[in-house]
Image 1 (cartoon, rainbow, N blue to C red):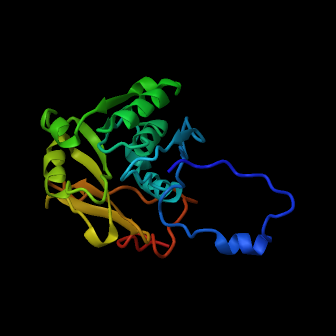
Image 2 (cartoon, rainbow, N blue to C red):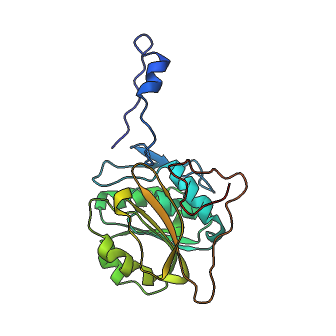
Image 3 (tube, rainbow, N blue to C red):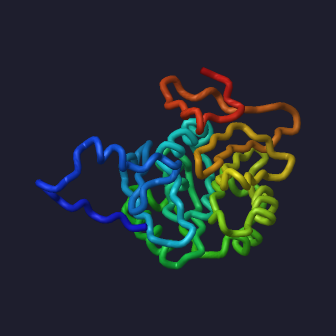
Length: 242
């Protein structure tokens, strides 16, 4: 999915109206080749997106919505990006104040690219890149070691039956869980997890869950004033605010 360079042309370019008509509609996925960190200390940093089967980086628009939801809980958080790919989710969390992130990626080429990326970031030592099968790696981790986990596996894989039950004990008693899946195959964690917010595009469903507290219902504060609001197709189903 590498992005090709634009070819300069001074005489044969199509009219602006045709270029607008031919522009693809937003699908909730990033343009192949590059994604960018959109907030925090590394804002604007470009991340390479390799041409790899099943690799679908989350779009800037969806990530901006997600991290507006998460901003109150990011400072000091221990983060797990379980199917890291480009690393956009885990690195965005670090950029915005998370204390540490583990980026797990099975593909050796992608894991190598992630190591190169974090090596060039000031403060990138807060990210640990692990080349491993996600399920095998999870079974070797202690319970309660993370405050926030991102789960966005290849949609054509069969991870959902096992990955969420294996993952959720590894999250703290006040943990948060982000799940991205195909719209027609929404994946939900075990019953002790409550849906906090969700959104949809034509290609994905994205949902944020919170472990149900034993004694109270706890939720995030409202989105910061002026934060972008999802479009109708992306608006969280249980977000009734303006």
